[in-house]
Length: 116
Length: 113
Image (cartoon, rainbow over the protein chains, first blue to last red):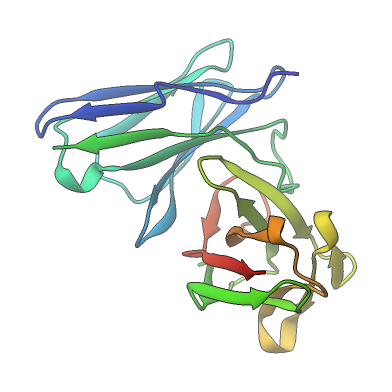
């Protein structure tokens, strides 16, 4: 069974540009979450999608947005990039719908974004 | 509100020595607690989880953690460190529903041969 696939793995952008990152979850998983990982802040929750609906949202500005398609694939977009947006963006999928979490988040290898 | 604090951003142990990685949580409700491991250039992998069953939780690769409500702690231990244990370890807490996790800032474990 294929794991969580994130594309692109590495990208370089300049301030003011926008970027779109893609995530394909494990087949059958309907929940997709996004996290930003930086050396000083650790992992910070961006948002979670389930059945094409945003179910939870972290404390990030509106420049960060996402969506989920009917096949559970997800994209996140960052507009008007800032230097501080440089980070590893991790996508995680889960087979879980509602109810108590099992902790079974399956992570991709991430998309490393560098903003110059 | 839920949060976790990991004491010590870097821990070094000798091969064969005890591994102890500390995590304290803050939660307004009974928490679900987790430890994840991240190897270089990889995503995170679940080590173990506490979901209000047994307070001593056993995970993969010989790791275990004990939930102590009185100390609001969930420290990760392994009796004997192996070179392959060198990685970044993250403690996490979540609400009782959904998949919104709050991660600690991580502890980098170095194993000295």
